[in-house]
Length: 461
Image (cartoon, rainbow, N blue to C red):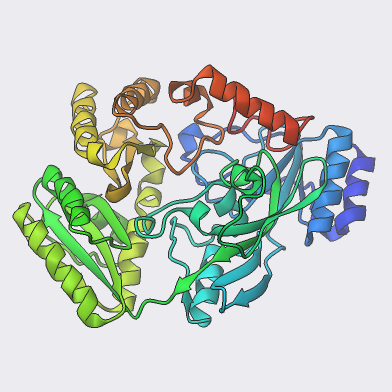
């Protein structure tokens, strides 16, 4: 980086908020992507931490004029290398933009800056007697990143993914213009929906700096059900029967007993279920104790008809939070031994066929292939492990991925249902998008970012 360019950045944000020291910015050069598939970070980067949209705008105008790549950065909790700098350039961290601007109880909305964490968003809603249902996993994730990745997670069955909560955004374009899209409206069909185009764009079309998020009335009662099975097909087969009865839980997760025990041990917590090999983890909400237990009783009856061994009902908030934490930690507990974690999605009714196919692939490659995920929305996570823990040699990784992707697409699915393309899925994108779709997307990228400075090498080949 030229000294005059660094000086110009310091003139925008102040000398204390521009850093070139490699050791000081080490934590900004990676995310939670498994080490074996982590892209190599750039050799020459500068970390810049603005505290306002106007300063983000000035940074992008400068970078656009000089042709310097900019890599927007949230909490660094992504799993596909989407925030990792892969060229010389600027790491643009939004961490200082962490203000809660307004809590609007009448409209059930909150306005926050992009650097507000998921944990703080949940706590802010709770203090106002409201509820933010979504829980993609790591609570240090930031709102801007959640929107840029269109995050999903365990609690998406009843209220949807991040796209369903975002009602307005402030975004800075790569050329420096600041746009305000949407607002506190529930309906708006004035022209093309640019806001929803930016949601899920992976930081390649604009830098999200502020958001209006929809909240919900706080539930009076919430309980967690753990339902064990000896056979994973019985567990998965229960899910459509629950939904067909008109019961829509907050979360319906498929997990495996050994994974939950390993994750609990990793966190130093106790896993309460000791029976079965496969489990359904279900969160039920309602306006009264009677309502949630009525739902729980119906779910128990359906599950027992599908060979469930038992139903454990957990009422205490602390114990429910522990179970959610254990589920959210599965990936991290296996991360040291992980080659890749996929997030394939199929139509929900095809989940049993997907599981059958994954079992066949595991047998073909003589490998242990742990699987967990969101059973009610068709999104599963096969986690491909190293040979030393029963997985595969690294040179076989692409063959296993190709087999899993072929299976998924044959079932009408997608190679990524919530983690996104980022950096590490680029080579596989053509398996689920045709040339014309990619051509159109590249055209959109050129309109927003004519000099290709914003998060280059991500989302699109």
